[in-house]
Amino acid sequence: MDNTLIVFASNHGTVEKCARELFRRIDGKVDICNLNRRDFLPDLSGYDSVIVGGSIHGGKIQDEISSFCNENLELLATKRLGLFINCLYSGEKAQQQLNDAFPEALNRKAVVCDYFGGEVDKLKLSFWERVVTTRMIKKGDMVVAISKERIERFADKMSSANESKN
Image (cartoon, rainbow, N blue to C red; front, side, top):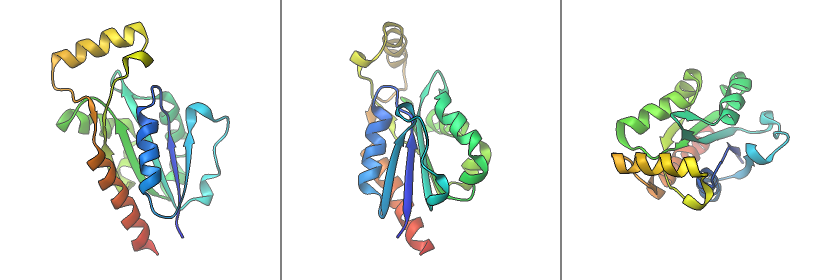
């Protein structure tokens, strides 16, 4: 049976919501780890697959995810890997943010990379986050919705990659 670890950082709950949906959909034994609530990581060597996810703020993924990827680059490159982001863009802009979020070596190695959209809970945002986010949404091409279809497709690809290995 395949062992999968989902590692994520969630500032306002959207990434956690998506990680938990993946948790429900991935076949095999699955553990979940929120880097914002953990003092230590599970031993990555005990997992066949690792999924890493975070959100984009100001065009960059959270420092916790960036550090995790850079500190574990060699070990992650030996795993079946899935990478995802949450962002408010779609299309080319979202794809560019996804490409920029993770180290190139991990992007090339990943079985699946995708963006799941985003949502805004104004009650969880600081005053300045509300101001900036509201202006950005009014300006244009942003989608304030999580794509269940993209999450489902991501989980299916990870599960089928797990099956093809066995």
